[in-house]
Image (tube, rainbow over all chains, first blue to last red):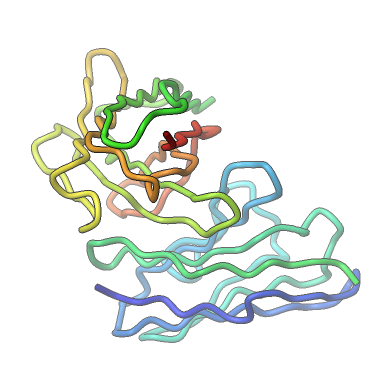
Length: 107
Length: 119
């Protein structure tokens, strides 16, 4: 199984700041990576697929990058509505696996 | 508008069975891989099972193989998850999720249904 190691587990940042969340795969996943946002009490929502493609309707302050085993999600100009947990997911191979999540709070 | 509406959850005793349903609308259901993803209370997301467009191919995580069965009815636009021999570690919110075209990322999720396994 492909293990996804996500960091940090939690993050506190000020409004307007830029934050970065990392995910490392245990083997090459060839850009088969998605990022999701889950607000408290809500279902997950797709942000990024194919490592760097923005899903329809997602604000452009979200971006994804990476290749091979290392991937990252960047949020520019942090807004109050970005308070959420963020998860990466590899879909290069079954079983599909998620990172353990990053909880983002506003300072 | 894509909608996924789960039902069938509840409080169940260990060892018993349950069948979850997910009614889909707003897209051509038969064209997309579908999946179940669960989330134990205060925990992360865990993929459970996926099913191909025609239902002929199914995939499961190891911990549910032999106990869970994913199926679909393309005439009714409905996804199912039969859960047998329930264990306490199956306690979670179960989400129905729609796969993107040609990739196993999920662009739409249901609101989730809670399954609690307890005596």
